[in-house]
Length: 395
Image 1: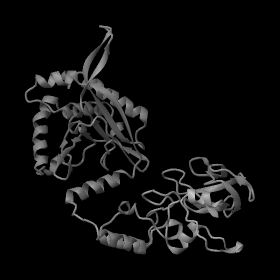
Image 2 (image 1 turned 120 degrees about the vertical axis):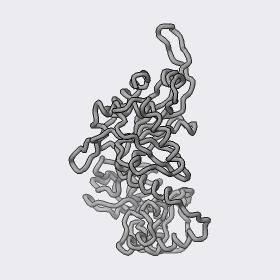
Image 3 (image 1 turned 90 degrees about the vertical axis):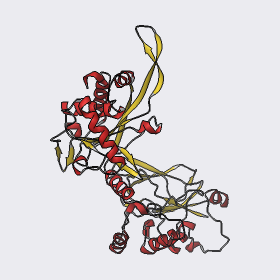
Image 4 (image 1 turned 180 degrees about the horizontal axis):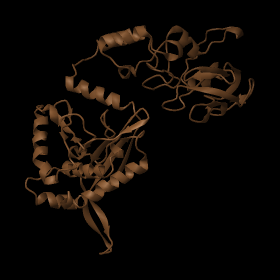
């Protein structure tokens, strides 16, 4: 049986690769996972491996030409046992030697896309809505849909592209399932996160001891929330060096004119981000009353217009949900989001006592736009925040 040699997904953002060398030739016997073809992407040189044991029937791909992910590069003559192992249906139909058609070719011609390995939730060679015709885009605009909404559709068009027929079938199938309307806040959060994810984002983290913060909070009236300590430390660190909070626009870094820092508050069916203006210029004790007011207004969804938007970074205390570690996503207009995990009792080595002592420790995470910030700069910023939190009386 003829088994297709498919251009694999060589990386998350790679859509095609160029053929630079054939490592075997037609008629050669090959083993499963043996390297067959050398290809080059814009990131690296890689190889395409044999899907199964067999004999190379032919290569349809040509040297120095580029092929999309999912394209057929050639065929391997394999036993029925090998074909069955890969999940191909072994049909008894007789086909002449000049009319050999692989199962995947039949599927492609008939408009069906089948996985090369059974059990995958989405066919392995389905490209999704990577290309959309003007007609398709117009229909999506009409319905208020984004490309991300169609990520699970297996297309029947050329190279697995989603056609308007695929799209309409998808819509019809949705009507047969339970549907509930998304709130306006949920839609707004989804849109913001979609826009944020168009950037390369990364996260660094480190543990910080909270004993000093907890002792300071115990003796304070009113008591600052744990996230406010982190917010104030972040504001001071950014006042010392505002470059990490800059935004990349074209080939310029736009530095913030004011250290306005937001903080995430869970509201009904979403998250609101009130903003403390000039957080670097006011002490912790001066910020706490306004912070508490904004938390309550956010929960009631009554935030004033001057207390939203325009912040340079956000602080989120995901520890309130019992989470130790998370990778929050910065808002589209921001470069940074500082996260704080749940505090836990942990053993800490005390050099003076030469023994382990219990401390309350939590993880701080910093997620950032990797176009603006690299790991070293992000790590130094996070270290500075941790250092400032270790001396809460200075905040």
